[in-house]
Length: 516
Image 1 (cartoon, rainbow, N blue to C red):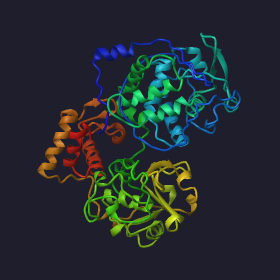
Image 2 (cartoon, one colour):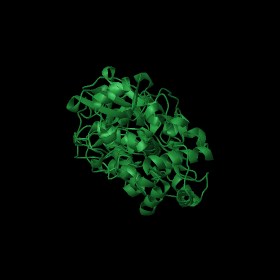
Image 3 (cartoon, rainbow, N blue to C red):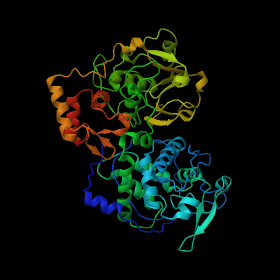
């Protein structure tokens, strides 16, 4: 698994947690005053591309705020207990990340949000009781109150010690979170996008903090700000009761074991979602309405494929992308990529040789949606999350931008959900899939698997490094709260097959990149 390798000694971690100092911060036109430094570390969250995130650094007016702000952002959080406390702050961070994902179009790591709030408000979120508790302001947000926030009950609060600005007091934590992620403070979505892409070492947190600094969120030195964010980040994914905390920290507590392991069900197969996610950024500049497997892979379409067999710079279109994802997942697909958006829908509602139509109310992450006719008249996507209306994120190949992750309403604007066909691989298609929950490995495969386990954890099923856990150092989000040896083995097997196709290939990748 791709991860930051950053292990603290007990002494260094204690020193980081014990650090707290006040630091004034400013943003031109959107003045923000941060509260300080505090503390923890690690890791990556995937992703994305795309976006409607704010990019304008222009000064907002006092009444309207930043013109790029998403004034309709809604954070699903209702508890107003103050001080908020660590557990509720995690829930608020997760809800904020989900809201930001919907309005900005890219996946956000909630750990970054939580860590930055700790940095500003202290480990217990009450470093400044009046501001953090009464004003419900965990980020030290300060600026003229725009009309859309005033309408929600936000108002000007206490002045800064510097005497050149005032904090915003919010009526509740929900409103604060909506202001934080809306884009009214352009530094925030920019930083969250930069920090949620994944990377080695401290790349994620460094990128996150650097964007905050460069866009005026704080005035302290970056080197003084990063350790506190690192320390707090580790606490988000490394709670004392880790098993019960995973659902809060990752938002995956409702997922089933079948979903995580790519087992075919009547609803959907999330291995399609995982594979599509791994292909974000593929085929950029190479949109082509010509179907030929040789344009996306050097492997024969009769062979088994893995993501590593797909040419990132290959050429295809939307239905070719879906074909490729299904091929990598091991499902039967028409030879020679011989389908389009129209014939996909016809098959799903008719013969069900490859696809089976389902009601959109049952659509989960990994569900395929196809609509319209052939060529430019049609389009098909793969859901990146459970269906919840037009804001549902999808993986789409629809232009020279390549594979992107965007909301349904943007990529399927001409195809209302009511007239589209929601479908999953049919039972006939699944007969040709290789079983993702069975190993049947050769001695060479087994040797490569044990090699990876030794490199990752020395074979320990309880090894922990931030949000990475167990023998294979799997992302906790993949384990869905089940830390058992059996689930680790099953999940690792599924991940290996969807990404590499074999343990030998996974080992080869590890040897070149120091992660898998």
